[in-house]
Image (tube, rainbow, N blue to C red; front, top):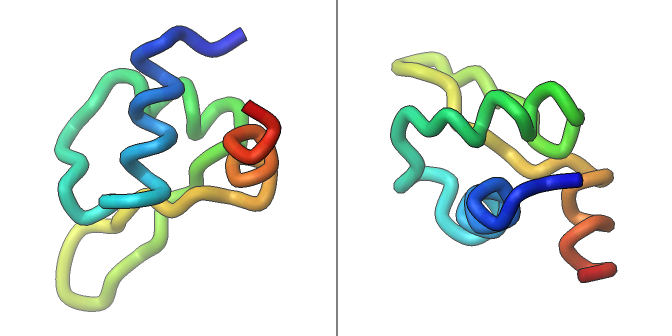
Length: 60
């Protein structure tokens, strides 16, 4: 079960991934494979929602 903060982080990843800094909740989402890190050529990776993460948000 995800916490309210983790759900909020998941929503932020979907709608504003470029505005997410270092968040502890992001680690949990990565572990649950709801988010994946997209590697960029010229900088750090950006979190991207996975198909599972998108399905979870649509269900909620």
